[in-house]
Image 1 (cartoon, one colour):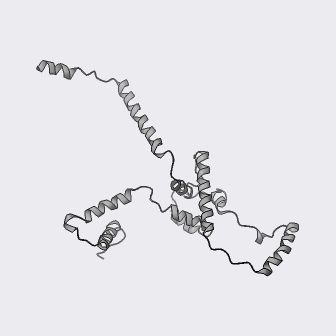
Image 2: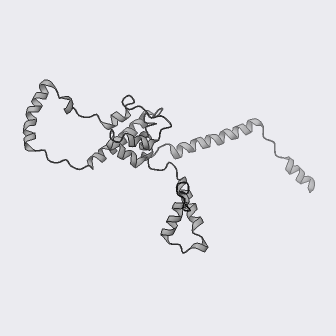
Image 3: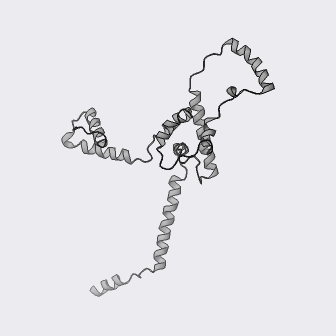
Length: 211
């Protein structure tokens, strides 16, 4: 009986280096395909956040189709923000009457510099000559604060999309902290108390309650 067991243990044929390499390549291929399966189509919010980051606004090495999708999304968002602005006050009648004369003069002499329309925010922002790409170590939020007067509408859109966390790690940590605070021995804490405890826990770097 023992001899039979010895035969069973010795029966498997050891794998050669070629077989091991083939298995590793197969595993790599499965990982590679799964990445495209789950993240081949980035969400619209990811495209907008990337385009509104002044460090990556030239969308270097992006496929041309993806570049057009991102720019179209930004154009749609820009129009939506402009449509939600307040309707301008009605133009006085005397201004309307004088505008016909002014338009006639414009046809002859061309518009004066003060009457030329300002460049579109999006084209000015994406133009790397008029608005150079920001360095990689720049603070993105500070960059938008410094340029909010140049790009007032884009500033609002950037504030909307750049505030989205890149990963769910912070929220997962917050759930873990909440579980550590609300235990079987501390199950009668008020929601306000739990909120304050979690705030202090996550901001101990900036807030010292013992000072």
